[in-house]
Structures are given as structure tokens and as C-alpha cells.
Image 1 (tube, rainbow, N blue to C red):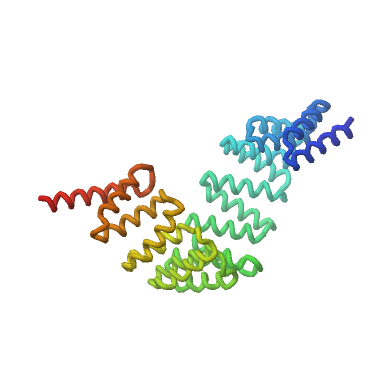
Image 2 (image 1 turned 135 degrees about the vertical axis):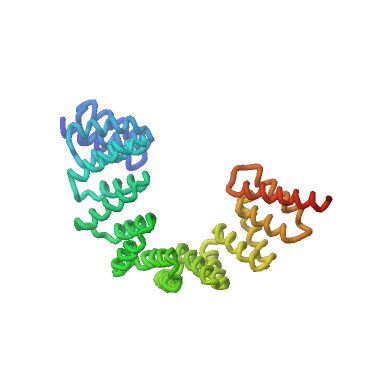
Length: 330
């Protein structure tokens, strides 16, 4: 009978992997009808329910499996089902149980870190990662993750120390140097930031994040032409990077290069007619041209018709236009 249950369960797994979920459920149900306490099948059916977002049903199956056998995988999956129900304290408990049962189960450590990060418990996330690294799991991805968390809570020295000691990991140089440049920018060490981001790009010249950071650093150094050069490199890689096009337009507006600014904004608005930032800066552009006041007002009124981050600014600008017109009449 045991062999039969194992075979039926395996058939269910094959169906699940082939995305034949109804057939998989039938097989798991059949196996459980022969042995309601079969923990492997309980866990597998729980995973299927997680896929279907039936989180409470999944929790009940994982909890039953874990009660029968205190297995690290059952505890881990039980934690997942609780996370999806926003029962974070209970989820934390089972992630910790999973780690205590098998400390080498990296998925449990990673899930615990993600839980702490999601709930804003950054110090706990940092402590967990540091423990993981100290206990012999010093994978570079964990060091980078730890550095990012340290940056988030503005522990820049600790982040830099971790990043510099990770630079000998081949294949990760561009990412590590990006974060080194980011920290130096935060500390206003612009020369060091520029050197680090250039080194990042020497390892991967097509990394958009590094190119964007390089442009930001160039702006901070008042090197507008270099910023545009970096933005243009990004647009060669991804012409639909609208955030970059808008940033270019803002720089062109500040330099009174109206035509170039308008070209970038119109490109964005052609694909996203209600992009609030593009609309706002197009209105700003039009306000600087006396014969475009009507067009500027029209755009600003459009921004008041839907919820966005620029509606309040648009309202203030419309009020100033109205006041100016009234003063002119008086």
C-alpha cells in the first residue's frame, strides 16, 4: 500500500510540474484517501493550494504535515502560507523553526531576511544575514544584500567595508562597484563616486543602473554634457526608458533648449498620454513661451482630472496664472 501511495503522489507531482493542476489535485486527493497522514502528499497538496492562492487551506495542510513530522521544509512552507495571510509573527516563528531543524537550509534564512525586510525590521534582517555569513555561508549575493540593507539604514561605512571586501568575486564587480559609487555619492565624495561608477561600467558598459547613476553623478559635478551622454547610452539599450527621457527634458529646459526638451517629452506622451511628470514639465516649458499660455493651462487642468503626484503643483500654477491675469486686468 505504501508503494502505491508513493506512485500516486509522484504522478501528482508530474501533473503539477506540467501545470495540469486539476489532475495533480485528483492524484494527491487519491493518495490521501489511502493515507490521510502521508506528510509528503500533504505538503505537495499544500504547495498546489499556495499556487491557487488558497492560503488558509495550504496552511492547514502544512501545519498537519509539520505536526506529524517536524521537517524543515514543512515549517518553511507553513511560514510561506502565513506570510500570504499577513500573519508575520507566526510566519517568523516557523521560519526560525525551519532554521533550527536544519541550519544549512538557505531558503529558510533567505525567507526570514525577506520577512524582516518586508516588515521594515531592517536591523533584524541585517543581524540574520550577518549570522548567515559568519556561520560559513559567505556567498557574495548575501554580502551584497547585506550591503544594500546597511545602505538603507545609512550605515555607509559598514556597507563600504563589506563591499570593498567583496570585490574579488569575479562576475559581480559591476554590481559591487555600483553600490560603492552609490555610497560615495550619498557621502558627497563625488570624485570617488565618479571613479567607482566608471569602473562599474568598465566591467559592464550596458548596465542601465550604473549608467543612470553615472548620469546623476555627472549632474552633481555640473557636467551636463556627460550626463546627456550617459542618458543617450541608456536610450540606445532601452529606448522606452521614459524616466531617462524626462530627466533629459528637465535638463534641456534648464538650458533653455526648448526644442530638444519638447522632443523628449512628446516621445513619452506619445506612449503615455497621462504621464503626470511629462505633462507637468511640458506645461512648465509652455509657460516660458508667451504664445503657449493657453496650452500650458490646458495641460495643468488635465493634471487635476486624475490622482497624481503633480496635481497639487498644477493647482498652484493655475492659481498663479489666474492671479497674474487678474492683476493684468486691474
